Image 1 (cartoon, protein in one colour):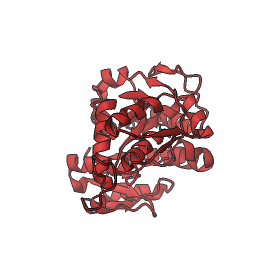
Image 2: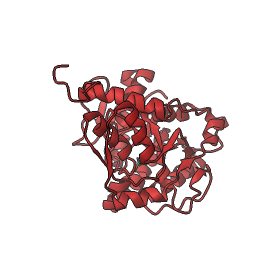
Image 3: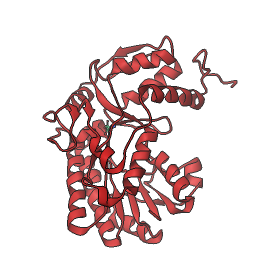
Length: 329
Ligand code: AKB
């Protein structure tokens, strides 16, 4: 990777991945692509180049690729699972039409492409425990349909045109820098904000509903590692199961209570998110990623929860002992 374009650079993953890639490859070599209304701010805006790149606008992608001599594209544009159900046509336009635009530009300009897939690419017929790398993928959400299509289309471009496409299936991502917005797994982020603010958390997912989750530093490492992996070792490309932890709301609430005594959670189950969660795996088998590009997570539930609480206390200006916003600090 010499010059990198990130499409969706101001989102939950993009805002952190852009900064990490700038540290690794040099600020001027990583272009933050964004859409109007989601402009980069602060360090993200000041530390390197940025460009308006709407994934539904193929000429705009090609212009940025030419202007910055791009050889690698991180395609992070997507509507997450719950919002995608409210706007299925837009989800397809961005998830599949957008990916097609990226792949065509990559084919013409010789770029490598990373496009995340998701645990959402699986469905109710998939084995739910230890979900294998290669298994049934019959999702019932438009989000999942776009993700499976994206996996197939990316593999097609690799086989047919030699485009270097690679991907991982992200679990729910837990982070404190930018909010996720619109996913089924968002509760695992929101619960930390409520706990650190000293508020009761209304959980939209029912007890006993397990999903794979991952702390953002591991997800970012995976996205970089897979793109730097030796291609001769890759049996798979689009897309690799990766995993680090799996929990239900009871387990994460109990873990948070160890760090924030007195934390309260009640259930207010959202039928849409609950039905999506039930159709997804409980836990993935990531042995192919481990074997083909040495994937290993660094954060388990305990390490993730400790870091999240610590970082959010600083971000929200909350006193560690009282868990009350401390405006004098
Ligand atoms: C979502 O919940 O939609 C995403 C995902 C697991 O892909 N976080």
